[in-house]
Image (cartoon, rainbow, N blue to C red):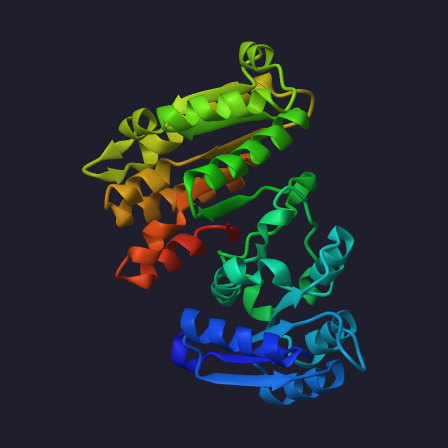
Length: 342
């Protein structure tokens, strides 16, 4: 979607926050056509008249709340994508927002770090749920509630797959190593406590730090490793198994990863599955090989869908802030079902 043609409707009753959203949009997507509404009734009228590409919608609105407004907008402007931006942080309310057809949800207190990425992700047909909700398996609405333009989009990966598989391929952009490690720790703890097997691909220093952190959560890491439910591998070594001419070779990649996942599935408890996190593609990006990183993320997305593997890829945010070509960042985002930033 060309930036110059993006039509965005901001629905927010607090003027200072509307101004913040306008400023963020100008910086992140350069949108030329921005419209505003201050209550739910006006939002419905403008959505019907303008058919915007994206609607940024608050929940606590005068006259008609955002959830009810979204239900009506879905009927009148089914092509419009809805991104809720609300002070409400209830998991149940986020699920209700998704049920009425929202493509994303950002809590206002997180908007400074997440709104720009959320807007880009939703405009590309992806789902976006903020980092505070990363470990909740929200269910996907039926097709008739999703924006028509998203129903066949390869980038719109369902939050709930067949057989109750909420397979995710997430990208996290972190301001420093401590926050990256904290996010990885939370991801791994949640997976292990759910009975899943975890595969980690990281640098040696990050692998050592993560094991120490995991111990503090009451996990018997010795036992988990002995059960082969925690597989910690060096990211650079893993890359060497499938890189050919500085690009990931699909045949080698799927051979190596399929064998690894097959072993991990056997170690998982009961009907639980495999979760993977790490920095393989981010390592390629750090080496200046952006094309290889994008191609690898595409392969990892296919892997996640094929085997039902929940995946978290951790990037240092500052590397993307420094890059000259913003389209590279957008390409990375497009290969993920969810994007968040801390």
